[in-house]
View 1 (tube, rainbow, N blue to C red):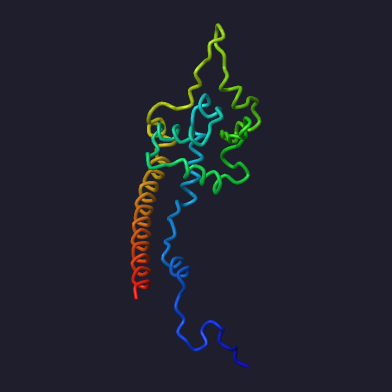
View 2 (cartoon, rainbow, N blue to C red; view 1 turned 180 degrees about the vertical axis):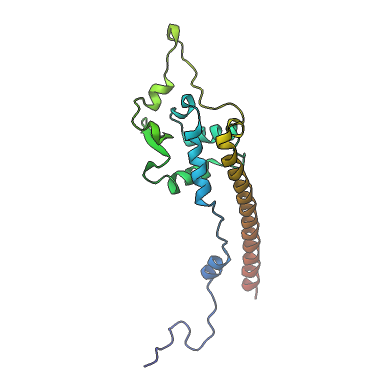
Length: 191
């Protein structure tokens, strides 16, 4: 027995609803390939021990990576996405929540069993009880000057620039789609 037509169509042409139009007009944002997210996270293990063993926030990680030679296109949001998508089972970085507001701190997994909390690292006292500055940023361009990391950073930077171009193109397309949808709504509202 043939299925009956849905109540909605009943022989009339089906026109998409505004919601369906807006869903169709949305562009999917580009995604950076997971292999580049893994490169991004693995760079921390390539730092000298005095930097790598230090707990850092995602914002500090951003400063550390861009100072080391990763392109300025890199955003904190992209780092957070990398931590979520490419760091399963603490593959690259281990995480620790610290303080009353549970601020997440990260450092390479090879230091997972080392003692010391982010708070202890940041409250170092020097001679005469003066506070010692904790240096978390490697020398400017460190990753580019190191043979082991230069090729990783070069590939990552190329992918980041392509990602930014795709992101800008998607935003432009979304903006155009939004304008067209607004124009259609205005035209359909006029008698």
